[in-house]
Image 1 (cartoon, each protein chain N blue to C red):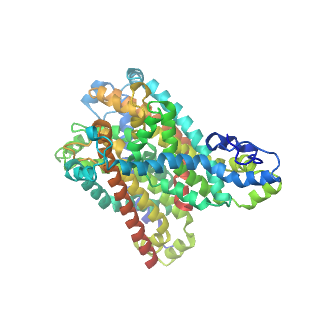
Image 2 (image 1 turned 90 degrees about the vertical axis):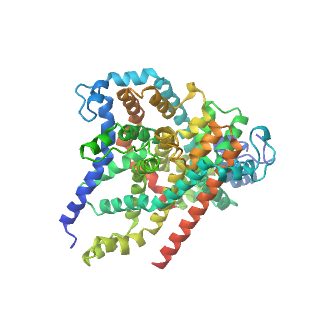
Image 3 (image 1 turned 60 degrees about the vertical axis):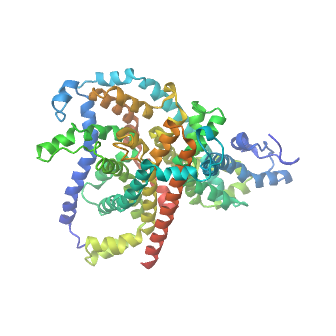
Length: 275
Length: 321
């Protein structure tokens, strides 16, 4: 062990500075959200002298953020539930069952991973409009499912691939059908992966702007992230209220992160190491 | 619900499959003749919803879009116009800027990969406080580009805090988001700030698969950090690096919309246009869906070419080691 400790401390200093640079913009925003307008104009950096919780209320009530918040919750919950169900079914079949055409179907799913939304945006909008799905909750849910399904299938496939196939064989000898194996064994066994993938899918959907802008043109149906962008125009002169709105929108993500960081990281990395 | 064959009843759990696939419900006897057929169909039923959605809403639109790009907009709606849309793209200074910016992104790619790679190396080598660093660096990656963009709108405003700091230290204020020569770098910088956490976590997972004995051996031999990175880490992580390079590039080309939308709206003077933003503007604002489709097709080709080139290059580099 000749690589000594002092060298590590030497690296720790710039890394700490970088960590500060990462965290400072966030703290700055929280601080601004707690200031009065006057305080912000006078000195941007001073700590808020009294915490202006009212800013949060102003942001929440003024531009219908409550409504946007609800829209986001509904759409994200439905999309994630569908993604997990459809994704785990396909992932199990592709990983554990040998059947004709399985590798072709796996390639189809994998290929879709490399088709970004921007590339298919225009025709997709047409298809959705043809089905009367523009500006409806099911439409946006379906758009999210279509967008994140390849990723979900891919991760579930790689997760189930690590499960020994003897398990399936044994369960089938016991008289289970393939559906029974899926429901009784694979679905419960997939829980850790479903959790990781589910959180990640939820984050993707929650954070999305482009798909939501395309699918939900009317103001009533805006999701939270699109709503935030409208806050910006309205409060260009009232930065603290704007910052408060940003804080509200970011809070669910922050809470999720604090509690489920491990699972998020697992989801991000599963594809990289197993694929 | 059309039965596939007279004796065919899919097995009990078809609930999930039937809605989309239409293969009926189910006998209790997996050993009967019909049961065997149902069992043989079962994997298809399980895969069907996913495949249907992916084919109808991902692959088919891709072909549709390519087709669409050879037709006209407005009064020529639907009529074939050959390569007119592509000619118009090439003539459009905004689209040319968008492509130039793609070139810039490709040039900046090594930076966007090296920073998280290096940070992951230090974290893996257990720099003091490494769990904390990991958590902090990763966090911005889970934030929406809208939120990140909004935060940096505040920080980078001309009369904002960053310029105030620069002013105090004597440097002149920089119009981060208002200067056509600076804005694209500001936006890309913010994007790298926000997303390198993803790559960092992927690198760390790669390290976890690296044989620790290799690193220990290098350490015992007294190898310097640089030599360790070059001779042990890079060859050992070639697959991870390949993955990060490709995903980072895809991210740069397809997930900067939120930032552009919030921070610059493509400005100033159109200098921060990227193809994805151009597509959005032509489709949404200008009602030029066919032109937008042509831009989509170009974006797809660019990604395909750059992606394949990278994979090819990295494969070769991997083999030489």
